[in-house]
Image (tube, rainbow, N blue to C red; front, side, top):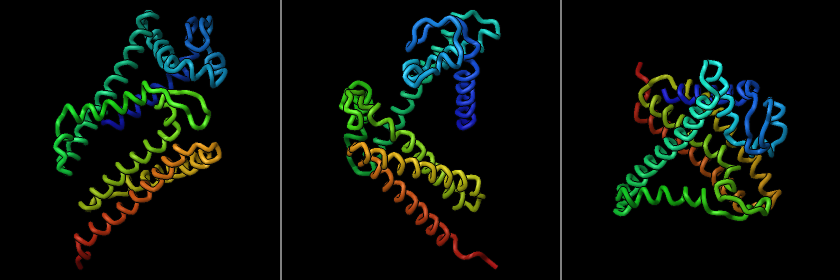
Length: 249
């Protein structure tokens, strides 16, 4: 259900940002100001403008779809803006809760009583995220002062996909232990892992060329973790096969 929901949201977002933008007439863009007749060429005329416009494509394009259903322009765009805000708020809430639970379980496993305290665990989950959002640091690659989160952004995609690969690997091991078909999980796991590793290697080369030591170090660490993850998965698979014993017959 979650995968279908995420896929549907991704499809709707793409349609709004691509087809919906062409249906918009007069609007105000954060990066360009007032526009009398919006089109793809106007909205995406440069990386700078597209980056400055941020989520406006989704709001305006999605609003255009709602306008086609008969809703007034103001109401349609307001509904889409509320949707964006709600999505961000629920994502942050979910991430905070999950991280608090993980820290609590880690505290129980390592016998670290403070981590089992929900308030302390929540603070440890929220404060680093707040620092990434509100603390400005010098970007080692460009030398510009930016939010810490944007400095780490270049490796977010690879780390996110490695997490997806880990999830698929765990599910594949779970199914294998119960002698269920695993190819529907193993094939995308291999693809996602390969793409993430290639992306990390490519970004590592860029970071080294830029002299960006912090991100280069993080990329190397993530590569090491990915390799470790694969070895752990293979070891778990061998243990599962050994525990199940040789096939009868």
